[in-house]
Length: 318
Length: 80
Image 1 (cartoon, rainbow over the protein chains, first blue to last red):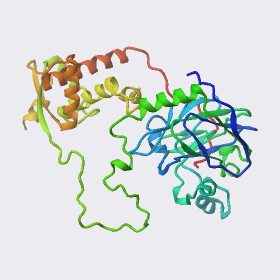
Image 2 (image 1 turned 90 degrees about the horizontal axis):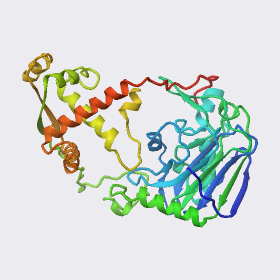
Image 3 (image 1 turned 180 degrees about the horizontal axis):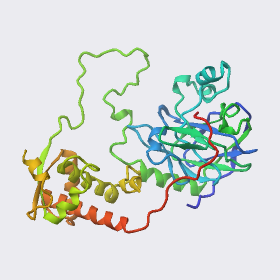
Image 4 (image 1 turned 90 degrees about the vertical axis):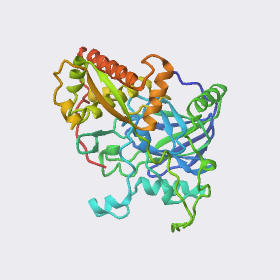
């Protein structure tokens, strides 16, 4: 994808270890995060600038793949599930991670007996405190230059591949509070190759090209009926009291409850049925399960829409 | 019992009838496909044709050489 040229730089910061910065990035602006020396993991949080309850949903981004890449979106948490930013450009040696959550102080006390280790939870909390947010508002990070691999047990981090001059460009599709921080665990773990390094952060103003792309992507990817915001919520008042209080008059209204099942008779020839029968055990224990599974596999592969990459059986079975 | 009998004789030359339970959301997919007019008009007909199309697609994929999707191994690190 060819990235549109942004406007002039309005913010240009060096973030020394172990620091971060919360900064508004407005729709159409481009946030650039760069390696100065290379090999530094960067944790990233992102909030809707007008409503911090809408924030980046790393778990849902993970459903599109364990690594994000150029062209992909930073999605917000359901039920909003809207595109907040788009990765416009990314250096090939920037390996991204959606598995590592964010480092915090506790494991360092457990594993190392250190109770004052810099960590991304605390760095992010300090950074967003500038905008009145609290440590509870920190969410899992999208990690740039964090080389995670995985096996049948879980994920693990290997040598950081970041090089000096590497960069990532993120186009804001809504007004966001973007929060890049230098990862705090990289000195004790391989995350940043066992040493801290500074990073550079820039925000480029909106240009005609970036504004047009942001508007286009917003229209395409934020126009669904199911992308709900507080005005659509049954409880539209955001709770601020930390103690949940029961409303005895409350009646839940579950979607499509109860489920309405219908039996459908499907007829196959003997030859067709023999082929279907071979999938018994793999795609279901009964003929009914196998037929339904085959139908839905086809549907997912041939009719899924909107660019969200859901479960794709063919790829996962390859 | 009827289903068990049906499942135990895949080699029978007679057509096989399978009763498939769809909920209302799954039936919406049938409605979408019905509008396309590609796979038929009746629910059972649509399911049958879609399943056969999927099996045909799978045969096509399996006839191509498989590519390894394994990542190269690197120096192992630690879990974060």
